[in-house]
Image (cartoon, rainbow, N blue to C red):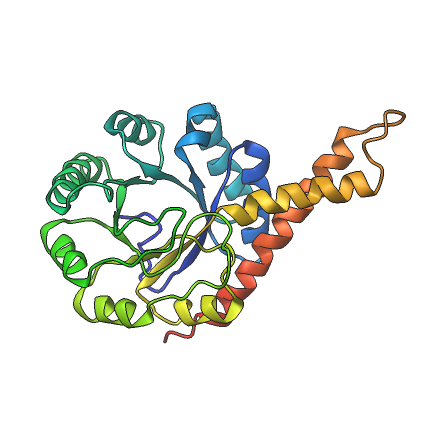
Length: 271
């Protein structure tokens, strides 16, 4: 399946976007390092997007910058939305049934896998809930899930959480290593915003960790750009120029993305 897992040695930071403008900033940051861009849409953002236009832009602008741009539907619970995203050309979808009993999670995941694989689309699923609170998955559940599904990417809860961390998260690397020793499925780390650089570098040294999700950092970059624009008095009524504000936003997001690409460069040591 010639999506972003086609080259087994590749690893990605995946960035949540909500518009063509935010997609452009992420693509620029990745392209400046010669890396393909993996763009994610949350269900909230997906519901507001002009899907056909976003797909066309990501494809055309990425090609213009000399890379590939991939679209991923993140944390979706609705089969109708998954089917729609596939129809609009999303490269991968995440079915999130992690809040259900394991057998239901397996059943629903297999349903999505059957539908998506027939159309050449990758599927991500989750074991152990990665939400606003740090949590850790059951090793036995992870192994059973991997054995009974043909999922392409598996998000395993190892102590990360979405949003901003309150304190320093403690990741269960012992669980991660046990899973890597038993399961062949490429792994995903959610809740990347707020992890220290040395944690990222440690995660990236596991070749099986293919994707680390970054969402809140993109939003905080947008917020910081607005703060700087206000500090520089760009919001004064007289002479207000929205293009200058857009430049601040693009620069702030792109700079954050470039920093993550530098971490990729430092962290990937596979032969």
